[in-house]
Length: 300
Image (cartoon, rainbow, N blue to C red; front, top):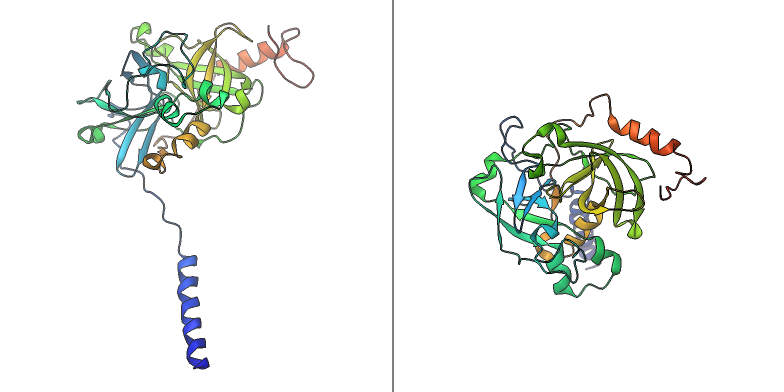
């Protein structure tokens, strides 16, 4: 009896050991369209309650999404920026996507989810501004996740940004009337706000209406933010950028988006020289009274 029990225990342990040693399954990314021919990619326009710029491509199993700002479906005024109290079109609303043959569907809105949950954290309410638009399967063969001009993204940045760290973006406001030369943006992070929920950035040129939702990435090509607001302090015409890592972490607290992942670009990330962000970085660093001794930017 004892010998039999011992042999059974050994066999059971062998099974447990085998399971423990098995690699954790990873979710395979979809097969993407060729970068040169894809018509749906980061930076294309989306139109829900108004025209915005998409940020990045995401996927969850066999579903593919295009990211935009949650406020792009907002029904309030331009000053209605608190996602826990501002009006919004509901999830399920159709979204026009430039380059798609069929409308997408607003599948996730941080504003809607926070209101349904009764979110009370002030920073989360103020800065959690991410929406995910489900792309119709008929258009999956038109999608590539590469950011125009820059390549990437190479991943999600999970740490804060330092003062005057170089940042990049790709905006596509219809107010620029299709002049793509003005779409790439080069700039610096001025300061982080809201316990890391937001980054105040200055870029050449600044984000304008229609750029809302644009993706931001660091000098390594890691995606860190979503363009949310136009700021007037500490620097005029700077922009508030919601922290993508925190926004995705919030989305993953809901069962239907537990597996949401950023799609990586199929082309390597690179910044062509000369890099205008270097000049802006130098100007702000050397401006009289711009920085305190600990490197924090003050109002100019």
